[in-house]
Image: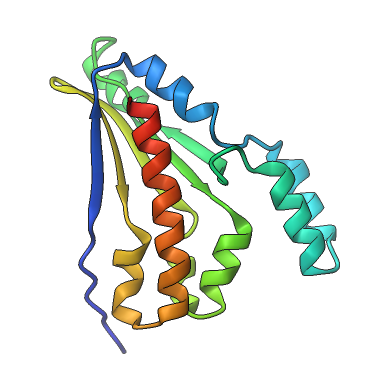
Length: 164
């Protein structure tokens, strides 16, 4: 049995914009493929260039796509009522980027696609992301870290633009 300790770095930015505006800004920059069709298309691809073309059609201007989202705030509001602050967890990524990391560090599959948390707090709307480089640093693989750093840059830019 092996246990690896990982120190995680969290990027956070706070927006003064209303929650719905922040979500709209985020949504406009990530792709939203029809997931059943996307999965079917990926499964029927015979080569990596085919997968790459399918992924490139699915991503948004950020180079990322939304795989799914969880309305965490709704679950809490069922107990605390309609004034409960809203909270959404987005699972986003890019299959091509994931492949590039997995080739060098198979454990990267535990962290990709990535999670973005957007939640309302008294001081504004928080957008948070645990960096991929922090997850992969303990593996000491320069190729995977280069891909992770590029992914982090995409996500940080996405969150910064959505918050502005």
